Length: 271
Image 1 (tube, rainbow, N blue to C red):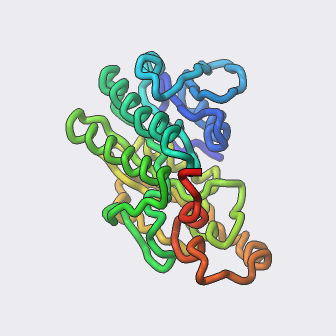
Image 2: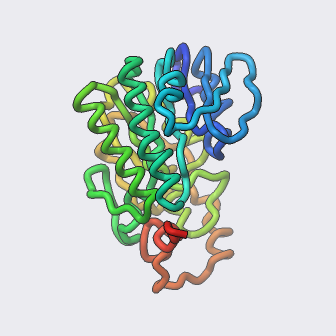
């Protein structure tokens, strides 16, 4: 896709670079910076020209402090990304979030894009529409940790002036997998557009935005964050016929159908 910004960064940090979205964003973000620093605990591809690859456990404050040194802005995708027992979520998503923001404060990083999640709002019903001011209703430990992360971002904006766009990512895949995703789908191109507008908008303070494409059906209202300038260009609509043919009947008593969080509302966090 064409660049969504002419602004260029000297050094960007992408955490969670080995994950699905991290691997997708890696070549895309490189187009907007001189050096892209990549971190994860999982195996990553070796560094190419203009890249730095660093293994970093987010719960290790000293390691995170070194990771953030010298970066201009951060795209924070790192951490546990599915419903899990509390211990790994506590380490990566709770301790790790505070470590990252403390490092950003000490190294004077002023802009972060935080990969929050639609699961912060998972226990709203699918017949409700939510916006940035709707109270969180997490659907599990994962969603709870992302709600905490948004509170961390708010604190560091209010107290230390670190700007954050918390992106409540819907379902970012090559195409929607089921009828729920007709409402939550975020194309990879729109993901890039959203991340770059979040990094380059003149003033964001702490803003919460829902990360979806321009889908015909949606549970998310982004009218309160028009200042960011995100204009999705893709839609789940071209996939609708195939998705509905594959899933023609919904069980209206199934919590995964009733609530916006889908299957996460039934996941067993203690399993």
